[in-house]
Length: 494
Image (cartoon, one colour):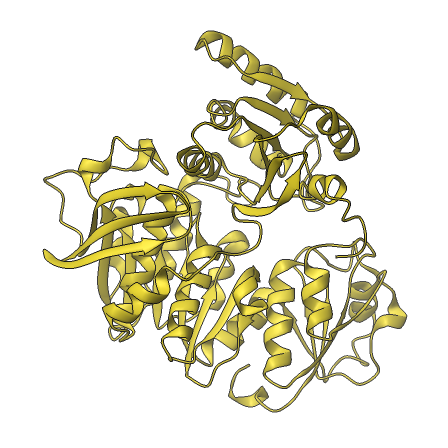
């Protein structure tokens, strides 16, 4: 926390099972604070992280959950006095809580971040992988970083690291303008691609949040950017610090791209500092040759699939070198990173079919994941189970979703996973399935399309259909991973 609250605190978190609050709670425990919290009774992937950190979680929400002795309360932005009994009780009893600091999750994370030399990893896509990867490279290179990631990282045995250095690498989110709480020493900005239409009503409003954030980088700080992103190009000069750019060379454009329509680097553009060429994929790894200001740094190898992860790797390399890690150590540890949970994560096998889980929930992310998957498994039959995430996103990006799945052999669409913060309805998964069917007919795409409302019904269907060598891709930001739990008989608590 800031200088006035560094001493050991008794902290209570409302909505602690959210990925962000779980990440922060685990870090606070490692910093020596006493942390407990509350949430609904449902079991989530974060439950095992909280248990591993010995953080006591009370369910469901109730006034009696709130400890008598407290220094601070941190609450999820999903909850307020209108929809949460604990928040209502706090608001109704100002005298009892007058000496207790009350912070939103974003404000609390900002306090932690601002007490360090904070490096913020932001952007529309790739934040989780890039922040974990950068943290891993720094950690393995002996830099002793603090790291906060919005997902469990198996190689961290949790969602972050607590180190002795002043550096804090953190995944920071633009949603609800959470960036306003952070004062960065450095920023890694991978891409800007319109999202969260429930909060940002226009693309201009979305871009402005990033523009305002770049203004915060001090003259002694740095900004790592994707030189091929046209939205970043519009605002990069707002940064007062050192600007370091990366891109994948144009001669590789014919390969599957993360964002084909948005990759705009041309021969006449300002050249990037770091440029990847000679991209190759073989078995379970990819490689590329790296140039830095026209100097050859050699061939780098990564274990993660997809061209988008080569871009993420370039961001990691650029930031790590700026933080005084040698190219030799970066090259060594870049290849050793195995990824985070729910990012092209292999969960197991069922009837010979490989089950892969991915968090992609935006059309750009979906296309990137599919391109990487097809590149690694070019001859396998791919069945994707898509769980649309939020009604607002599905409606705002409907046309883009329609064209996102054309490369898979079979597509199953679950009912939309709605957010409690949004108005339900306005679009449906049945409509999306029908629109994809029409799109396929128009473009002569042969693909089996199924609208299957529930996870239980999908599991029943897949038990009859999956065969040896199939790839089953579970994709979405909701709880589509529960399909795998059922197929793999992991119904017990996580």
